[in-house]
Length: 138
Image 1: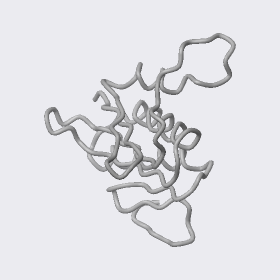
Image 2: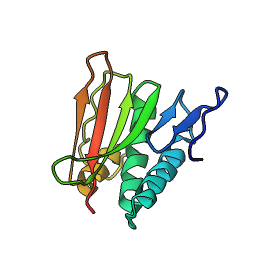
Image 3: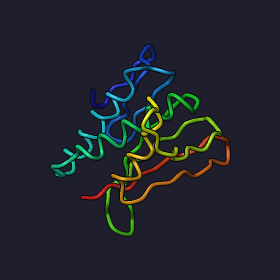
Image 4: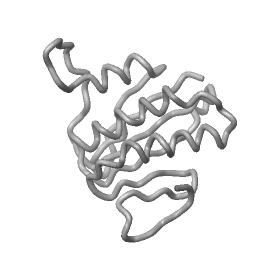
């Protein structure tokens, strides 16, 4: 998957910089997990499972409640060097953790992100849309 761009593809990886989902695509969470795994591996970080779970939930949330295109980026926090997952979409709806429910069949993704990430949040973009991010533990 690494380093290719083709106009016909719905999901495009640009080197190890970012993953672009051009339209709603059910393969996006799997592509995001692979992208994050490759990013971790390329930096010698062995344990990517938690980050892959987090990115899967953030991308799924963007697909269900945001607007394409969706961009996934991996960066390092300048203060402590920890990996940060960024998922950008064009929607204005701000994600929030839903109250727990034993009967709901969905709505647990951000609860899971909140439990697994060191910290997480959403930042609005000046041009519209938002970036939802999560800092990963090492």
